[in-house]
Image (tube, rainbow, N blue to C red; front, side):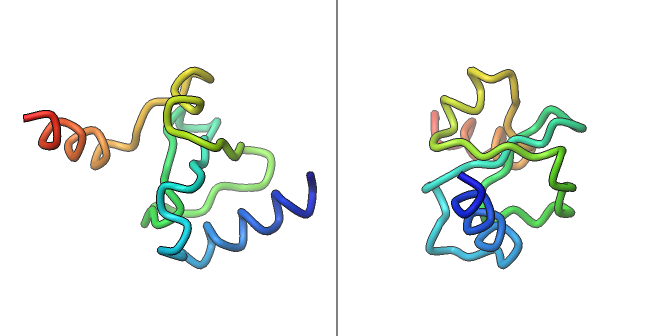
Length: 77
């Protein structure tokens, strides 16, 4: 598990577009979640949790970062 978390963190830190949509990161201090390409400041190790899907992240109580919410609204129209 630690190796997987380290791998996901490195992809998140690098803003690697190959992983966009492959995993999501919940940030406990803000209650939001980000995609791997998120421009937001990196969260400390104890404040982030990795999830396989946006739905899984939302079920854990996180909400999308504001720009994702706007994107979802436009996609719904």
